Image (tube, rainbow, N blue to C red; front, side):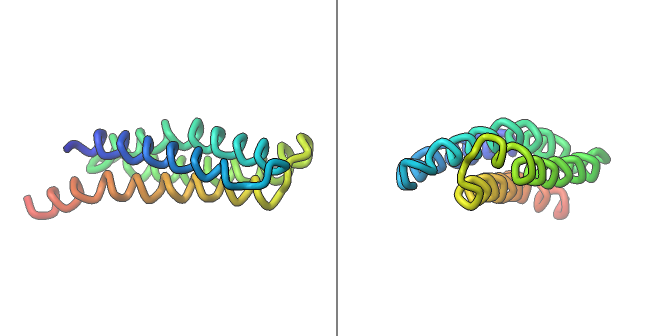
Length: 122
């Protein structure tokens, strides 16, 4: 399986698991958690795809830095502006957002790791 295929499979798994876990939170916090999950997927999905496609090239460090910056910016904007303005529960919403972002980082690592290993032995 290619790195892109592993990434799509992992991203799909993250989305399905996150959607399932959303049903376990209290009904009052559910809208914020849903917003966090969807926002995390929409922002992180394309950035992770870019990183996976850039693995093994000179663009990798740029993709990694932009992805890290986007994650930090998203958390800052969510915590300082979006969550308070929309009245979502701060803890539940930010925890869900961090969970999705960290899950995508793990998916990126899993998707890229075999490719990286193959390039070292070649």
